[in-house]
Length: 115
Length: 116
Image 1 (cartoon, rainbow over the protein chains, first blue to last red):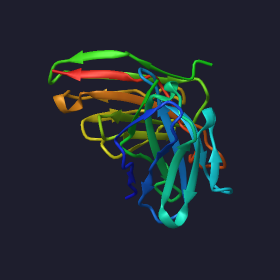
Image 2 (image 1 turned 60 degrees about the vertical axis):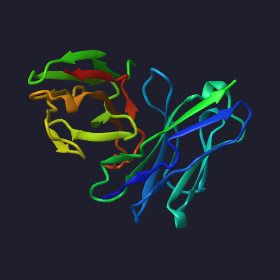
Image 3 (image 1 turned 60 degrees about the horizontal axis):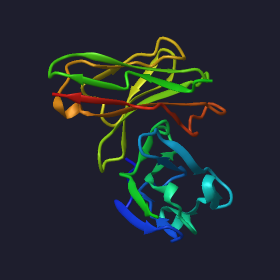
Image 4 (image 1 turned 90 degrees about the vertical axis):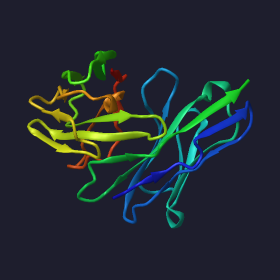
């Protein structure tokens, strides 16, 4: 079964600091990869996704992520965070196989940005 | 479009009670799913459906039932509530592309359930 690991459970940064959140998955085949964000009191929204092609994908609000197949990783980055980026971030993986209708989420990373 | 809607927003149950969480989408999505969100565990898939009349189990299906009689609605039933089912429940839907459901999922606002 596929699994997703997010190593940082809580991250605290000051405004303008750079952000990198780690995501590793366990499935060895072809995957679709997602990062979702959940702002306080709100539902999950898609930040960005990778299906194929350029392994560096850009999403909304200045976020980007890089798919490194050899490392089974899909880390999320932002060069300069803002207070409004305070939220919980979830990495998710969908394996393109017979069980590909299941989206597996990591445990989430809670980001707090201090003004 | 309203997107994915869920009712109720909050619910408190006593152990042993049953209830149904409602989910509806107006995007004509074939794929719908239910997740529960618990601290530190991310979202875990309970049940999903790839179309009307078709449902399947996810990662944590025990204690829950679903049905899909229409494309729009996908209710989740708790048969006999237990404190371990205290959680936030999210419904999501997705479109298919060439028969594949490997696409972005759109989430509802969630239902916060407490079982005493």
